[in-house]
Length: 432
Ligand SMILES: [Zn+2]
Image 1 (cartoon, rainbow, N blue to C red):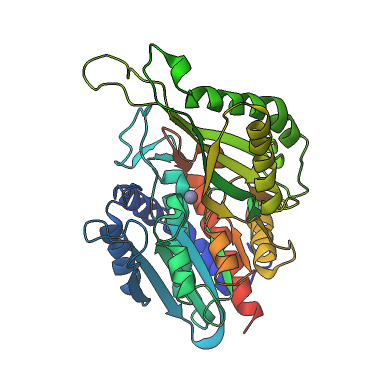
Image 2 (cartoon, rainbow, N blue to C red):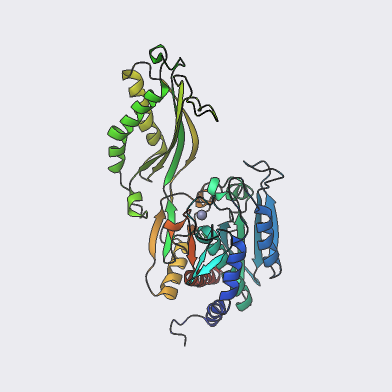
């Protein structure tokens, strides 16, 4: 029976997870039915309370922490986080499963109700099914089965449901990390069930720099553009230089980090938005009759662990300054919007190894170590909590995140719950 020679209490835990598949699916469906859309941060409190009520019935000590003063926090949209902790019978380390409860907007193109929790052909559909309520449900079931089946457990297990990951995590993990919730001695290992695929251990992510660049002009009558200075044309000149100079340069930069998908092993630049000129006269169908005096561009530059943020910025500034020197009347302003440094931990770190071993035992194949193209809350655990032992691992296909008809495979949720239980069991046992 026990071909893997696992300890009997772990065997019992894994068996129990199989018995609770309906509970796992029901839990994930319930979570999807809270439309926790961010922005603005809808339904955070009821979703957090749902998680807290469930876990307090199972012996977890539950705390709610509202991120007072965090961006977006107000009485209508409170940034309510939930942290639940189960103390084992003996002292030991703490393994923490952290999931964000917010989801991105629905967008177009859905063929099912995004907040109904529709199940079809072994897949659970809904906004957040993949990113990341399926992973949250797997971690809750894994923790509950461990608590029930390992009576002499050492150490402690924590589950958190945190907010605002999709908008930077300031009212969620960042806020809690500032209060010590993601640091030793309270917590020793963190697993973030983001959808990186059920057989991958994610050990880090690329860096981010978001900035707004504005080109400036002078307003004048549209019939006499020569009397003004068109900010949109200046922006066009910048776009041309990005195409001719910067994009080819970024393509040459490759990281040694195992970033997936392959295209994200290079430095990338997205142009998120561009706005120029006065708005059209609403309802009249008529254009604004002026020469635009401002054009704004928002960029999303993803950089590699081999690059310094200061270099990334000066590369853009050099291009802008060159335009200022060579193009008549070119002037600009630049404003930083958001920055995150790349993070990568050692594959030999205990939590990375424990999850990799779990994947090997539960799925019968070696884990793939990867890094994420985008950031997630690991950055706050690393930078603010100063806790290195943190990885992302969860069910769900990375590429489905934020897409219409997002889903998670029920089979993968079950496998992920087993891998999580296996990993937590060994991390707690190894450190008693
Ligand atoms: Zn996510």
